[in-house]
Image (cartoon, rainbow, N blue to C red; front, side, top):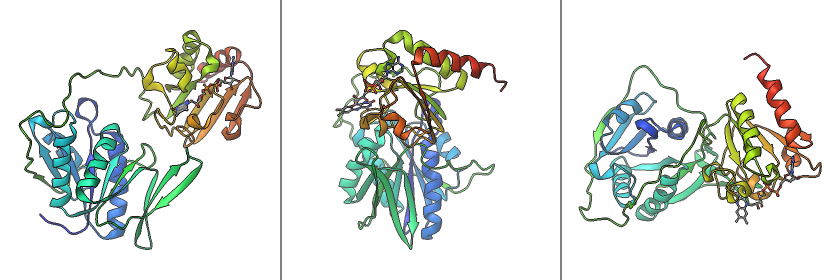
Length: 330
Ligand SMILES: Cc1cc2nc3c(=O)[nH]c(=O)nc-3n(C[C@H](O)[C@H](O)[C@H](O)COP(=O)(O)OP(=O)(O)OC[C@H]3O[C@@H](n4cnc5c(N)ncnc54)[C@H](O)[C@@H]3O)c2cc1C
């Protein structure tokens, strides 16, 4: 089973056992790396009762799947997952380990890097091979600078920002063997214990994966105004986002916050309404392909990064935009 220089992708599951879209993006990036480095692409699937997920992963261009199954791995817990991931890395002698830039991966990756004495680059937007060297590009200084890193460690871990790469395409036929890993789980309570799980209410389209996002800021002035944004989002099939003030004021849910301390999104279209364009907000959405800003102040910073801008009060602009779009046949 030992394999020199594998690229290993940790595949995570979302709701109802589906593979997270960002894991598919890691598989595509991992395939490109593996091909350029002349190595194999392996996937690690960690959890409880997940053989069907491992079977499904075989349809996304991997050369093999490592399955770490244990009833104690039902929910993410750092110590159990750490043991499983480290075991997987060692089993295939992975040189590069890719994971989505998810909450769990950001908890796990530094622990794994420490254990493996590995390098770690988080929040990558591009991972590529240039003249035989693997380069990791990530935004720094709130997205004002793109930094390119290389690693000198034997093993390097990286987390990939959601929607920064194309997803692997499913093939009809599965490929590669599934190999079960022996996972040692301490029968005790472990380093961390889940005391309570509180599901985050996410209505409609998920912000992370949305192709269109309509976001409101302090300029919306209250919860009522967000209803106008919901109408616009409904017509566009968009997810609803917010800057930090509406979240702090309780007009929008914490799950909808975009920015430095919120989610990082990169949709095809981002509509910023009543948002001034503070650096901490922009760093969460400046990867959007097209940015439309609606703001009553012509000098607002958001217009500096917007592709299209409308100067005016959102109370007048948003309803007429919604009605116009509603009238366009799909
Ligand atoms: C450590 C730290 C982390 C932070 N993290 C985040 C983060 O993750 N996300 C985030 O967003 N912020 C974050 N912030 C806050 C950030 O600095 C800004 O304060 C915030 O982004 C401003 O939000 P805003 O643009 O909605 O509000 P404002 O800056 O107050 O802008 C409101 C805008 O609405 C316009 N407006 C007013 N009325 C109307 C109207 N009727 N029609 C149209 N336009 C109107 C105004 O012209 C103005 O441009 C963070 C701050 C710190 C210090």
